[in-house]
Amino acid sequence: MEGAGTLPEVESTSRNLPVETDVIANDQSTSEAASRGTLNRSNNRSALKRKRGSSTDSKSKPKVKRKKSKTTRTPRPNYTIEEGEDMLLIISNVNQSDSVWRPKRKGRKKNIKKLPKKKGQGKITETRKTKKHVRTTVIVDTQAQGSDPDHQVEPRVNVSLSGDDTDRWGQRLPVEVLVNIFQYVVHRDGAVPFLCRVSRVCRLWNDAASSPNLWRSVTMGFCWIEPGKSQLPKTEMRIKNTVNWMAQNRLSQLREFSLCHWKKNVDYVVQALSESCPQLSSLKLSHCTGVTDKAFQSLGSHCKQLECIDVQNTDVQGEGLVTFLETYGHQIRKIFFSYGSKSEKLLTVISKGCCPELRSLAVNTNLNTGFSQLAICIPALQIGCPKLQAFSMMNVMPRLKMIRNIPTSTPGFPLLEELCIATTSMSSFSDQDLNSLLHGSPRLRVLDLRGCSRVTPTALSALPCQDLECLFWGLYFNSTSVASSKNGLHLLTEKWSRTLRELDITNHAFSEEDLEIAMGHLALGEGAEALRSLNLTGTKLTSQALRLLIGHAVALNYLNLSSCRYLPRGMKKLYRGQEDIRQLLDKIE
Image 1 (cartoon, helix red, strand yellow):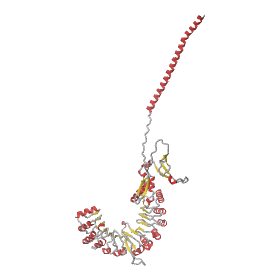
Image 2 (cartoon, rainbow, N blue to C red; image 1 turned 180 degrees about the vertical axis):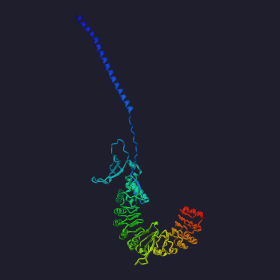
Image 3 (cartoon, rainbow, N blue to C red; image 1 turned 180 degrees about the horizontal axis):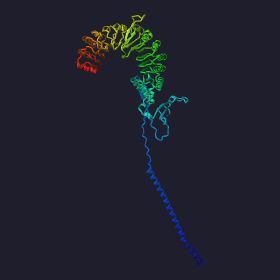
Image 4 (cartoon, rainbow, N blue to C red; image 1 turned 135 degrees about the vertical axis):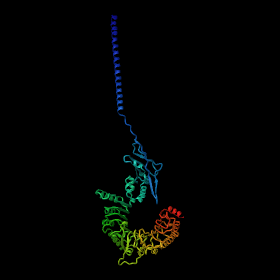
Protein backbone atom coordinates (compact mmCIF):
# COMPACT_ATOMS: atom_id res chain seq x y z
CA MET A 1 0.00 0.00 0.00
CA GLU A 2 2.83 2.32 0.84
CA GLY A 3 4.48 1.70 -2.51
CA ALA A 4 1.22 2.20 -4.29
CA GLY A 5 0.70 5.36 -2.32
CA THR A 6 3.98 6.95 -3.22
CA LEU A 7 3.93 6.53 -6.93
CA PRO A 8 1.10 8.93 -7.66
CA GLU A 9 2.87 11.69 -5.78
CA VAL A 10 5.95 11.23 -7.90
CA GLU A 11 3.88 11.34 -10.99
CA SER A 12 2.12 14.40 -9.83
CA THR A 13 5.36 16.14 -9.24
CA SER A 14 6.66 15.06 -12.57
CA ARG A 15 3.55 16.28 -14.24
CA ASN A 16 3.72 19.63 -12.48
CA LEU A 17 7.32 20.43 -13.47
CA PRO A 18 6.68 21.54 -17.04
CA VAL A 19 3.90 23.81 -15.82
CA GLU A 20 6.30 25.71 -13.57
CA THR A 21 8.87 26.09 -16.32
CA ASP A 22 6.25 27.48 -18.62
CA VAL A 23 5.27 30.08 -15.99
CA ILE A 24 8.91 31.05 -15.50
CA ALA A 25 9.35 31.39 -19.24
CA ASN A 26 6.28 33.50 -19.50
CA ASP A 27 7.49 35.72 -16.67
CA GLN A 28 10.89 36.25 -18.35
CA SER A 29 9.27 37.12 -21.65
CA THR A 30 7.04 39.76 -20.03
CA SER A 31 9.97 41.33 -18.16
CA GLU A 32 12.02 41.52 -21.36
CA ALA A 33 9.13 43.12 -23.19
CA ALA A 34 8.70 45.68 -20.42
CA SER A 35 12.38 46.53 -20.48
CA ARG A 36 12.27 46.90 -24.26
CA GLY A 37 9.26 49.25 -23.93
CA THR A 38 11.01 51.49 -21.42
CA LEU A 39 14.09 51.62 -23.63
CA ASN A 40 12.00 52.51 -26.65
CA ARG A 41 10.20 55.24 -24.72
CA SER A 42 13.46 56.73 -23.43
CA ASN A 43 14.92 56.60 -26.93
CA ASN A 44 11.85 58.31 -28.35
CA ARG A 45 12.05 61.05 -25.73
CA SER A 46 15.74 61.70 -26.40
CA ALA A 47 15.03 61.80 -30.12
CA LEU A 48 12.23 64.27 -29.58
CA LYS A 49 14.53 66.42 -27.45
CA ARG A 50 17.17 66.35 -30.18
CA LYS A 51 14.61 67.37 -32.75
CA ARG A 52 13.34 70.19 -30.59
CA GLY A 53 16.85 71.42 -29.89
CA SER A 54 17.80 71.30 -33.55
CA SER A 55 14.62 73.15 -34.52
CA THR A 56 15.18 75.88 -31.95
CA ASP A 57 18.84 76.22 -32.94
CA SER A 58 17.91 76.50 -36.56
CA LYS A 59 15.18 79.04 -35.91
CA SER A 60 16.85 81.54 -33.55
CA LYS A 61 20.19 81.94 -31.84
CA PRO A 62 20.54 83.41 -28.34
CA LYS A 63 21.47 87.12 -28.21
CA VAL A 64 24.88 88.04 -26.86
CA LYS A 65 24.78 90.80 -24.26
CA ARG A 66 27.19 93.64 -24.86
CA LYS A 67 29.30 94.67 -21.97
CA LYS A 68 29.02 98.28 -20.95
CA SER A 69 32.18 100.25 -21.27
CA LYS A 70 33.62 101.10 -17.91
CA THR A 71 34.05 104.79 -17.30
CA THR A 72 36.90 105.82 -15.08
CA ARG A 73 35.75 108.38 -12.61
CA THR A 74 38.30 110.41 -10.82
CA PRO A 75 37.39 111.79 -7.41
CA ARG A 76 36.72 115.46 -7.10
CA PRO A 77 39.56 117.01 -5.06
CA ASN A 78 38.79 119.12 -2.06
CA TYR A 79 40.34 122.60 -2.19
CA THR A 80 41.01 125.38 0.23
CA ILE A 81 41.09 128.83 -1.38
CA GLU A 82 43.36 131.45 0.16
CA GLU A 83 43.05 134.91 -1.47
CA GLY A 84 46.27 136.92 -1.48
CA GLU A 85 47.02 140.43 -2.64
CA ASP A 86 47.48 139.60 -6.33
CA MET A 87 46.70 135.90 -6.65
CA LEU A 88 44.58 132.99 -5.42
CA LEU A 89 46.32 130.14 -3.56
CA ILE A 90 44.69 126.73 -4.08
CA ILE A 91 45.66 124.38 -1.24
CA SER A 92 44.55 120.76 -1.30
CA ASN A 93 43.33 119.28 1.98
CA VAL A 94 43.46 115.61 0.86
CA ASN A 95 46.31 113.57 2.39
CA GLN A 96 47.71 110.23 1.33
CA SER A 97 46.12 108.57 4.33
CA ASP A 98 42.64 109.72 3.33
CA SER A 99 40.35 107.29 1.60
CA VAL A 100 39.80 107.94 -2.08
CA TRP A 101 36.28 107.79 -3.38
CA ARG A 102 35.77 105.17 -6.09
CA PRO A 103 32.83 104.20 -8.29
CA LYS A 104 30.26 101.85 -6.84
CA ARG A 105 31.01 98.20 -7.51
CA LYS A 106 28.51 95.84 -9.03
CA GLY A 107 26.45 93.96 -6.49
CA ARG A 108 27.48 96.16 -3.60
CA LYS A 109 24.73 96.56 -1.01
CA LYS A 110 26.31 98.66 1.70
CA ASN A 111 25.49 102.37 1.54
CA ILE A 112 27.33 103.47 4.67
CA LYS A 113 31.09 103.41 4.77
CA LYS A 114 33.31 104.19 7.71
CA LEU A 115 36.25 106.42 6.91
CA PRO A 116 39.48 106.37 8.92
CA LYS A 117 39.73 108.76 11.81
CA LYS A 118 42.00 111.74 11.84
CA LYS A 119 43.54 113.37 14.82
CA GLY A 120 41.06 115.67 16.45
CA GLN A 121 38.05 114.14 14.69
CA GLY A 122 35.42 111.72 15.83
CA LYS A 123 33.25 109.51 13.73
CA ILE A 124 33.26 110.08 10.02
CA THR A 125 30.47 108.53 8.04
CA GLU A 126 29.93 108.74 4.32
CA THR A 127 26.52 108.24 2.77
CA ARG A 128 26.06 107.70 -0.93
CA LYS A 129 22.88 107.92 -2.92
CA THR A 130 23.27 106.33 -6.26
CA LYS A 131 20.16 107.84 -7.80
CA LYS A 132 21.06 111.51 -7.40
CA HIS A 133 24.84 110.97 -7.38
CA VAL A 134 25.33 113.00 -4.21
CA ARG A 135 28.00 112.24 -1.66
CA THR A 136 27.70 113.79 1.80
CA THR A 137 30.53 113.68 4.32
CA VAL A 138 29.74 114.56 7.95
CA ILE A 139 32.70 115.40 10.19
CA VAL A 140 32.22 115.82 13.92
CA ASP A 141 35.03 117.39 15.95
CA THR A 142 35.42 115.55 19.26
CA GLN A 143 38.15 117.74 20.67
CA ALA A 144 35.98 120.83 20.44
CA GLN A 145 33.20 119.29 22.54
CA GLY A 146 35.58 118.05 25.27
CA SER A 147 34.33 115.89 28.06
CA ASP A 148 30.99 117.67 28.41
CA PRO A 149 28.30 115.26 27.21
CA ASP A 150 25.70 118.03 26.98
CA HIS A 151 27.82 120.12 24.66
CA GLN A 152 26.39 119.97 21.13
CA VAL A 153 28.57 120.52 18.10
CA GLU A 154 27.10 121.26 14.70
CA PRO A 155 28.57 118.87 12.13
CA ARG A 156 30.38 120.27 9.12
CA VAL A 157 28.79 118.91 5.97
CA ASN A 158 30.68 118.79 2.71
CA VAL A 159 28.50 118.07 -0.30
CA SER A 160 30.15 117.22 -3.57
CA LEU A 161 28.63 116.16 -6.84
CA SER A 162 29.66 112.95 -8.49
CA GLY A 163 28.70 111.36 -11.73
CA ASP A 164 29.26 111.95 -15.38
CA ASP A 165 29.27 115.75 -15.00
CA THR A 166 32.38 115.67 -12.79
CA ASP A 167 34.39 114.14 -15.60
CA ARG A 168 34.68 117.54 -17.23
CA TRP A 169 37.59 119.70 -16.12
CA GLY A 170 35.36 122.74 -15.71
CA GLN A 171 33.23 120.96 -13.11
CA ARG A 172 36.21 120.37 -10.82
CA LEU A 173 37.41 123.98 -10.66
CA PRO A 174 36.63 126.05 -7.57
CA VAL A 175 34.11 128.83 -8.05
CA GLU A 176 36.64 131.48 -7.07
CA VAL A 177 38.98 130.44 -9.88
CA LEU A 178 36.17 130.50 -12.43
CA VAL A 179 35.13 133.98 -11.31
CA ASN A 180 38.68 135.26 -11.80
CA ILE A 181 38.86 133.69 -15.27
CA PHE A 182 35.54 135.21 -16.22
CA GLN A 183 36.74 138.63 -15.04
CA TYR A 184 39.46 138.68 -17.68
CA VAL A 185 36.97 137.88 -20.44
CA VAL A 186 34.44 140.40 -19.15
CA HIS A 187 37.10 143.10 -19.03
CA ARG A 188 38.02 142.41 -22.66
CA ASP A 189 34.70 141.47 -24.31
CA GLY A 190 32.06 142.72 -21.89
CA ALA A 191 29.58 140.95 -19.64
CA VAL A 192 26.91 140.48 -22.32
CA PRO A 193 26.55 138.04 -24.03
CA PHE A 194 29.51 136.15 -22.53
CA LEU A 195 28.07 135.62 -19.04
CA CYS A 196 24.65 134.75 -20.46
CA ARG A 197 26.18 131.97 -22.54
CA VAL A 198 28.51 130.43 -19.96
CA SER A 199 25.73 130.35 -17.37
CA ARG A 200 24.01 127.69 -19.50
CA VAL A 201 26.96 125.27 -19.41
CA CYS A 202 26.39 123.72 -15.99
CA ARG A 203 25.39 124.59 -12.46
CA LEU A 204 28.94 125.36 -11.39
CA TRP A 205 29.46 127.81 -14.24
CA ASN A 206 26.04 129.29 -13.60
CA ASP A 207 27.01 129.98 -9.98
CA ALA A 208 30.26 131.61 -11.11
CA ALA A 209 28.55 133.70 -13.81
CA SER A 210 25.96 134.88 -11.29
CA SER A 211 28.58 136.62 -9.16
CA PRO A 212 27.57 140.30 -8.78
CA ASN A 213 31.19 141.40 -9.20
CA LEU A 214 31.07 140.38 -12.86
CA TRP A 215 28.00 142.50 -13.60
CA ARG A 216 29.27 145.92 -12.53
CA SER A 217 29.74 147.16 -16.10
CA VAL A 218 27.22 146.06 -18.76
CA THR A 219 26.75 147.10 -22.39
CA MET A 220 23.49 146.00 -24.00
CA GLY A 221 22.94 146.24 -27.74
CA PHE A 222 19.68 145.76 -29.59
CA CYS A 223 19.01 142.62 -31.65
CA TRP A 224 19.07 142.98 -35.42
CA ILE A 225 15.72 143.56 -37.16
CA GLU A 226 15.17 143.29 -40.87
CA PRO A 227 14.82 146.76 -42.43
CA GLY A 228 11.23 147.81 -43.01
CA LYS A 229 9.77 145.38 -40.46
CA SER A 230 8.60 146.07 -36.94
CA GLN A 231 8.96 143.91 -33.87
CA LEU A 232 6.29 141.39 -32.96
CA PRO A 233 4.36 141.94 -29.69
CA LYS A 234 5.49 138.59 -28.28
CA THR A 235 9.12 139.40 -29.02
CA GLU A 236 8.78 142.81 -27.41
CA MET A 237 7.25 141.24 -24.30
CA ARG A 238 10.09 138.71 -24.10
CA ILE A 239 12.62 141.54 -24.29
CA LYS A 240 10.90 143.38 -21.44
CA ASN A 241 10.77 140.22 -19.31
CA THR A 242 14.45 139.60 -19.96
CA VAL A 243 15.37 143.15 -18.91
CA ASN A 244 13.29 142.81 -15.73
CA TRP A 245 14.85 139.46 -14.83
CA MET A 246 18.40 140.70 -15.39
CA ALA A 247 17.77 143.88 -13.38
CA GLN A 248 16.41 141.91 -10.42
CA ASN A 249 18.74 138.88 -10.44
CA ARG A 250 22.05 140.01 -11.95
CA LEU A 251 22.46 143.80 -11.82
CA SER A 252 22.16 144.47 -8.10
CA GLN A 253 25.69 145.94 -7.99
CA LEU A 254 25.64 147.60 -11.41
CA ARG A 255 27.87 150.68 -11.69
CA GLU A 256 28.14 151.44 -15.42
CA PHE A 257 25.47 150.72 -18.02
CA SER A 258 25.44 151.39 -21.78
CA LEU A 259 22.46 151.03 -24.11
CA CYS A 260 23.27 151.14 -27.82
CA HIS A 261 21.03 151.38 -30.90
CA TRP A 262 17.68 150.93 -29.18
CA LYS A 263 14.80 152.45 -31.10
CA LYS A 264 12.00 151.44 -28.71
CA ASN A 265 11.46 150.77 -25.00
CA VAL A 266 14.38 152.96 -23.91
CA ASP A 267 12.30 154.53 -21.15
CA TYR A 268 11.24 151.06 -19.96
CA VAL A 269 14.84 149.85 -19.69
CA VAL A 270 16.01 152.98 -17.86
CA GLN A 271 13.13 152.78 -15.39
CA ALA A 272 13.74 149.07 -14.69
CA LEU A 273 17.44 149.71 -14.08
CA SER A 274 16.94 152.75 -11.90
CA GLU A 275 14.49 150.87 -9.65
CA SER A 276 16.72 147.78 -9.22
CA CYS A 277 20.21 149.35 -9.39
CA PRO A 278 20.59 152.03 -6.70
CA GLN A 279 24.40 152.04 -7.09
CA LEU A 280 24.29 153.09 -10.74
CA SER A 281 26.92 155.81 -11.34
CA SER A 282 27.22 156.02 -15.13
CA LEU A 283 24.56 155.84 -17.86
CA LYS A 284 25.31 155.90 -21.59
CA LEU A 285 22.62 156.03 -24.28
CA SER A 286 24.25 155.81 -27.70
CA HIS A 287 22.26 156.13 -30.97
CA CYS A 288 18.94 155.63 -29.15
CA THR A 289 15.57 157.20 -29.88
CA GLY A 290 12.44 157.78 -27.86
CA VAL A 291 14.02 159.02 -24.61
CA THR A 292 11.39 161.05 -22.76
CA ASP A 293 11.02 162.82 -19.43
CA LYS A 294 10.00 159.58 -17.65
CA ALA A 295 13.48 158.12 -17.92
CA PHE A 296 15.18 161.12 -16.30
CA GLN A 297 12.51 161.40 -13.59
CA SER A 298 13.10 157.78 -12.63
CA LEU A 299 16.86 158.34 -12.57
CA GLY A 300 16.54 161.36 -10.31
CA SER A 301 14.25 159.67 -7.80
CA HIS A 302 16.14 156.34 -7.48
CA CYS A 303 19.79 156.75 -8.53
CA LYS A 304 21.34 159.05 -5.95
CA GLN A 305 24.89 158.04 -6.92
CA LEU A 306 24.56 158.88 -10.62
CA GLU A 307 27.55 160.99 -11.71
CA CYS A 308 27.92 160.53 -15.48
CA ILE A 309 25.32 160.94 -18.25
CA ASP A 310 26.25 160.33 -21.89
CA VAL A 311 23.51 160.94 -24.48
CA GLN A 312 25.67 161.54 -27.54
CA ASN A 313 23.95 160.77 -30.85
CA THR A 314 20.70 160.12 -28.97
CA ASP A 315 17.35 161.78 -29.62
CA VAL A 316 16.23 163.24 -26.29
CA GLN A 317 12.63 164.39 -26.47
CA GLY A 318 11.21 167.18 -24.37
CA GLU A 319 12.88 169.05 -21.55
CA GLY A 320 13.67 165.97 -19.45
CA LEU A 321 17.46 166.39 -19.38
CA VAL A 322 17.22 170.15 -18.74
CA THR A 323 14.84 169.57 -15.83
CA PHE A 324 17.02 166.80 -14.47
CA LEU A 325 20.12 169.07 -14.43
CA GLU A 326 18.20 171.86 -12.74
CA THR A 327 17.03 169.50 -9.96
CA TYR A 328 19.80 166.91 -9.60
CA GLY A 329 22.72 168.64 -11.30
CA HIS A 330 24.68 168.97 -8.05
CA GLN A 331 25.58 165.23 -8.21
CA ILE A 332 26.64 165.19 -11.87
CA ARG A 333 30.37 165.22 -12.64
CA LYS A 334 30.41 164.23 -16.33
CA ILE A 335 27.94 165.08 -19.06
CA PHE A 336 28.21 164.42 -22.79
CA PHE A 337 25.60 165.39 -25.39
CA SER A 338 25.37 166.10 -29.11
CA TYR A 339 24.59 169.32 -30.87
CA GLY A 340 20.86 169.89 -31.29
CA SER A 341 17.94 172.15 -30.55
CA LYS A 342 18.41 171.72 -26.77
CA SER A 343 22.17 172.29 -26.73
CA GLU A 344 22.05 176.00 -25.99
CA LYS A 345 19.56 175.47 -23.15
CA LEU A 346 21.76 172.81 -21.63
CA LEU A 347 24.82 175.05 -21.73
CA THR A 348 22.80 177.89 -20.19
CA VAL A 349 21.67 175.66 -17.30
CA ILE A 350 25.24 174.46 -16.73
CA SER A 351 26.58 178.05 -16.84
CA LYS A 352 24.08 179.12 -14.16
CA GLY A 353 25.82 176.91 -11.61
CA CYS A 354 23.45 173.93 -11.55
CA CYS A 355 26.44 171.56 -11.86
CA PRO A 356 29.10 172.95 -9.50
CA GLU A 357 30.91 169.58 -9.27
CA LEU A 358 31.20 169.13 -13.04
CA ARG A 359 34.57 167.71 -14.10
CA SER A 360 34.08 166.86 -17.78
CA LEU A 361 31.90 168.51 -20.45
CA ALA A 362 31.72 167.39 -24.10
CA VAL A 363 29.58 168.63 -27.00
CA ASN A 364 29.99 166.95 -30.37
CA THR A 365 28.18 166.42 -33.64
CA ASN A 366 28.22 163.91 -36.44
CA LEU A 367 30.84 164.38 -39.15
CA ASN A 368 28.18 164.32 -41.87
CA THR A 369 26.06 167.13 -40.39
CA GLY A 370 28.24 169.91 -41.83
CA PHE A 371 28.96 173.29 -40.31
CA SER A 372 27.50 173.89 -36.81
CA GLN A 373 27.82 176.85 -34.49
CA LEU A 374 26.99 176.94 -30.82
CA ALA A 375 26.67 180.13 -28.79
CA ILE A 376 28.55 179.96 -25.52
CA CYS A 377 29.43 182.46 -22.81
CA ILE A 378 32.93 181.55 -21.63
CA PRO A 379 32.98 183.79 -18.49
CA ALA A 380 29.65 182.41 -17.28
CA LEU A 381 30.84 178.84 -17.83
CA GLN A 382 34.03 179.53 -15.91
CA ILE A 383 32.06 180.86 -12.97
CA GLY A 384 29.46 178.07 -13.04
CA CYS A 385 31.98 175.20 -13.38
CA PRO A 386 35.12 176.13 -11.44
CA LYS A 387 36.22 172.46 -11.11
CA LEU A 388 36.10 171.64 -14.84
CA GLN A 389 39.03 169.45 -15.92
CA ALA A 390 38.12 168.45 -19.51
CA PHE A 391 36.21 170.55 -22.05
CA SER A 392 35.56 169.33 -25.59
CA MET A 393 33.66 170.76 -28.55
CA MET A 394 34.27 168.30 -31.36
CA ASN A 395 33.30 169.56 -34.83
CA VAL A 396 31.25 172.41 -33.31
CA MET A 397 32.24 176.05 -33.82
CA PRO A 398 32.04 178.00 -30.55
CA ARG A 399 30.45 181.41 -31.02
CA LEU A 400 31.31 183.56 -28.04
CA LYS A 401 28.59 185.70 -26.54
CA MET A 402 28.26 187.98 -23.53
CA ILE A 403 25.57 187.97 -20.84
CA ARG A 404 24.52 190.87 -18.67
CA ASN A 405 25.73 191.04 -15.09
CA ILE A 406 28.60 188.64 -15.89
CA PRO A 407 32.07 190.10 -15.24
CA THR A 408 34.49 189.96 -18.13
CA SER A 409 37.50 189.17 -15.96
CA THR A 410 37.25 185.72 -14.41
CA PRO A 411 39.78 183.32 -12.87
CA GLY A 412 39.31 181.00 -15.86
CA PHE A 413 39.51 177.22 -15.47
CA PRO A 414 42.24 176.69 -12.86
CA LEU A 415 41.90 172.87 -12.91
CA LEU A 416 41.53 172.42 -16.69
CA GLU A 417 43.79 169.68 -18.12
CA GLU A 418 42.28 168.93 -21.55
CA LEU A 419 40.81 171.28 -24.13
CA CYS A 420 39.50 170.22 -27.55
CA ILE A 421 38.24 172.75 -30.11
CA ALA A 422 38.72 170.54 -33.17
CA THR A 423 36.90 170.70 -36.48
CA THR A 424 37.27 169.30 -39.98
CA SER A 425 36.64 172.66 -41.65
CA MET A 426 38.12 176.12 -41.31
CA SER A 427 37.44 177.52 -37.86
CA SER A 428 36.96 181.13 -36.83
CA PHE A 429 38.54 180.46 -33.45
CA SER A 430 41.16 183.17 -32.94
CA ASP A 431 43.96 184.11 -30.53
CA GLN A 432 41.59 186.22 -28.45
CA ASP A 433 39.18 183.32 -27.98
CA LEU A 434 42.06 181.04 -27.00
CA ASN A 435 43.29 183.54 -24.43
CA SER A 436 39.82 183.94 -22.90
CA LEU A 437 39.58 180.20 -22.43
CA LEU A 438 43.08 179.36 -21.15
CA HIS A 439 44.35 182.47 -19.43
CA GLY A 440 43.91 180.81 -16.02
CA SER A 441 44.77 177.15 -16.85
CA PRO A 442 48.34 176.36 -15.73
CA ARG A 443 47.64 172.58 -15.52
CA LEU A 444 46.81 172.08 -19.21
CA ARG A 445 48.30 168.87 -20.62
CA VAL A 446 46.34 168.18 -23.83
CA LEU A 447 45.46 170.87 -26.39
CA ASP A 448 43.57 169.95 -29.58
CA LEU A 449 43.22 172.83 -32.05
CA ARG A 450 42.86 170.92 -35.32
CA GLY A 451 41.33 173.18 -37.92
CA CYS A 452 42.02 176.40 -35.99
CA SER A 453 44.06 178.08 -38.69
CA ARG A 454 43.72 181.57 -37.20
CA VAL A 455 45.59 180.69 -34.03
CA THR A 456 49.22 181.81 -34.20
CA PRO A 457 52.35 180.35 -32.56
CA THR A 458 52.79 183.57 -30.63
CA ALA A 459 49.46 183.13 -28.84
CA LEU A 460 50.26 179.50 -28.09
CA SER A 461 53.66 180.32 -26.63
CA ALA A 462 52.02 182.90 -24.33
CA LEU A 463 49.79 180.34 -22.59
CA PRO A 464 50.44 179.88 -18.85
CA CYS A 465 50.80 176.08 -19.08
CA GLN A 466 54.40 174.86 -18.81
CA ASP A 467 53.90 171.05 -18.94
CA LEU A 468 51.99 170.52 -22.19
CA GLU A 469 52.24 166.91 -23.35
CA CYS A 470 50.05 166.73 -26.49
CA LEU A 471 49.59 169.44 -29.12
CA PHE A 472 47.32 168.68 -32.09
CA TRP A 473 47.34 171.60 -34.53
CA GLY A 474 46.89 169.99 -37.93
CA LEU A 475 44.83 171.42 -40.79
CA TYR A 476 42.63 168.71 -42.33
CA PHE A 477 40.81 170.60 -45.06
CA ASN A 478 41.57 171.83 -48.56
CA SER A 479 41.67 175.60 -48.94
CA THR A 480 43.90 178.05 -50.75
CA SER A 481 43.13 180.95 -48.40
CA VAL A 482 44.73 179.45 -45.30
CA ALA A 483 46.65 182.17 -43.44
CA SER A 484 49.23 179.99 -41.73
CA SER A 485 52.34 181.46 -40.15
CA LYS A 486 55.67 181.00 -41.88
CA ASN A 487 57.71 181.09 -38.69
CA GLY A 488 57.24 180.57 -34.98
CA LEU A 489 57.16 176.80 -34.54
CA HIS A 490 60.54 176.90 -32.79
CA LEU A 491 58.93 178.97 -30.01
CA LEU A 492 56.59 176.10 -29.17
CA THR A 493 59.17 173.31 -29.31
CA GLU A 494 61.60 175.35 -27.23
CA LYS A 495 58.99 175.95 -24.51
CA TRP A 496 57.63 172.38 -24.31
CA SER A 497 60.64 170.32 -25.44
CA ARG A 498 60.92 168.82 -21.94
CA THR A 499 57.32 167.53 -21.67
CA LEU A 500 56.04 167.17 -25.25
CA ARG A 501 55.02 163.58 -26.16
CA GLU A 502 52.83 164.02 -29.26
CA LEU A 503 52.91 166.74 -31.93
CA ASP A 504 50.71 167.21 -35.02
CA ILE A 505 51.39 170.11 -37.43
CA THR A 506 49.85 168.64 -40.57
CA ASN A 507 49.78 170.97 -43.64
CA HIS A 508 51.29 173.96 -41.83
CA ALA A 509 53.52 176.04 -44.14
CA PHE A 510 56.41 176.63 -41.79
CA SER A 511 59.70 177.46 -43.50
CA GLU A 512 62.61 175.03 -43.82
CA GLU A 513 64.81 176.97 -41.41
CA ASP A 514 62.03 177.17 -38.82
CA LEU A 515 61.42 173.41 -39.05
CA GLU A 516 65.14 172.64 -38.67
CA ILE A 517 65.37 174.79 -35.54
CA ALA A 518 62.17 173.28 -34.11
CA MET A 519 63.32 169.69 -34.75
CA GLY A 520 66.63 170.56 -33.16
CA HIS A 521 64.87 171.66 -29.96
CA LEU A 522 62.93 168.38 -29.86
CA ALA A 523 66.01 166.24 -30.57
CA LEU A 524 68.39 167.97 -28.17
CA GLY A 525 65.90 168.75 -25.42
CA GLU A 526 65.51 166.94 -22.13
CA GLY A 527 62.36 165.09 -23.28
CA ALA A 528 63.72 163.69 -26.55
CA GLU A 529 63.68 160.13 -25.22
CA ALA A 530 59.98 160.45 -24.30
CA LEU A 531 58.70 161.67 -27.71
CA ARG A 532 56.27 159.02 -29.07
CA SER A 533 54.26 160.45 -31.97
CA LEU A 534 55.04 163.02 -34.68
CA ASN A 535 52.81 163.96 -37.64
CA LEU A 536 54.60 166.12 -40.21
CA THR A 537 52.34 165.47 -43.20
CA GLY A 538 52.60 168.13 -45.92
CA THR A 539 55.40 170.13 -44.25
CA LYS A 540 58.75 171.33 -45.62
CA LEU A 541 60.86 168.95 -43.56
CA THR A 542 64.34 168.25 -44.90
CA SER A 543 66.51 165.14 -44.66
CA GLN A 544 69.03 166.84 -42.37
CA ALA A 545 66.39 167.80 -39.79
CA LEU A 546 64.82 164.34 -40.02
CA ARG A 547 68.17 162.60 -39.43
CA LEU A 548 68.82 164.70 -36.33
CA LEU A 549 65.36 164.01 -34.92
CA ILE A 550 65.33 160.24 -35.48
CA GLY A 551 68.82 159.80 -34.10
CA HIS A 552 67.83 161.18 -30.68
CA ALA A 553 64.12 160.25 -30.36
CA VAL A 554 64.69 156.59 -29.55
CA ALA A 555 61.12 156.04 -28.22
CA LEU A 556 59.42 157.33 -31.37
CA ASN A 557 56.94 154.74 -32.69
CA TYR A 558 54.72 156.84 -34.99
CA LEU A 559 56.07 159.08 -37.76
CA ASN A 560 53.99 160.37 -40.66
CA LEU A 561 56.00 161.87 -43.54
CA SER A 562 53.32 161.72 -46.22
CA SER A 563 53.41 164.49 -48.84
CA CYS A 564 56.68 165.94 -47.52
CA ARG A 565 57.95 167.35 -50.81
CA TYR A 566 61.45 168.15 -49.56
CA LEU A 567 62.23 164.50 -48.85
CA PRO A 568 63.50 162.04 -51.49
CA ARG A 569 61.24 159.44 -53.01
CA GLY A 570 60.62 156.30 -51.00
CA MET A 571 60.62 158.13 -47.66
CA LYS A 572 57.30 159.99 -47.90
CA LYS A 573 55.03 157.57 -46.11
CA LEU A 574 53.74 156.50 -42.72
CA TYR A 575 56.08 154.63 -40.33
CA ARG A 576 54.74 152.57 -37.44
CA GLY A 577 56.97 150.95 -34.88
CA GLN A 578 60.53 151.58 -33.81
CA GLU A 579 61.92 148.98 -36.21
CA ASP A 580 60.56 150.79 -39.29
CA ILE A 581 61.93 154.10 -38.01
CA ARG A 582 65.40 152.58 -37.48
CA GLN A 583 65.39 151.27 -41.04
CA LEU A 584 64.51 154.79 -42.20
CA LEU A 585 67.50 156.15 -40.28
CA ASP A 586 69.80 153.61 -41.97
CA LYS A 587 68.43 154.63 -45.34
CA ILE A 588 69.08 158.33 -44.68
CA GLU A 589 72.63 157.72 -43.51
